[in-house]
Length: 196
Image 1: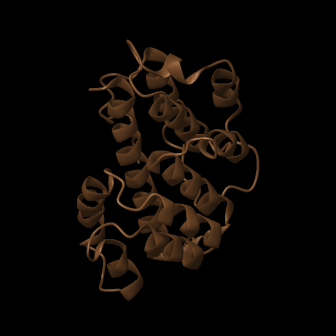
Image 2: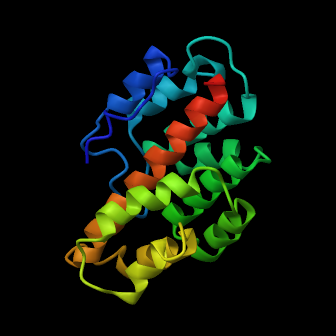
């Protein structure tokens, strides 16, 4: 999935470069079991969260969440975790939950999703996810993801079921949903960090 179309108006040039870096392969693993993209690591190590926004940062927690998200996008879970666990906001809880899901700690992921309950990105996330889910045959696990709004615990259940079954069509769906979740939350954090 090509993520370079993400609405990133307030995102800095280096932030845009990191989105484009290895765009075809970035964030395609449901579970990460080794090191991430070395080129991304080299760039990310020298950045502060303020480097990701053009102009003044209006919300430093949201800017920190962007940095956590970019580490996560390029499969560096430990670095993402160090940042997200310090952010005591719904966005920090969301990135923390996603990181634990991608490491395969499903119960911990669900705990952190509960801490982010009602995050402002949930409504657009549900709408975007429905567009991808609707063409799939009826399946109780899939239906639960957006029935009644965005249900991230149901996504965790789907990932747990299919992460090691790449031939299952639901595996492809889980990857698509993880992209949508990342994009939607990243866009929200970008706007919130910049105050736009």
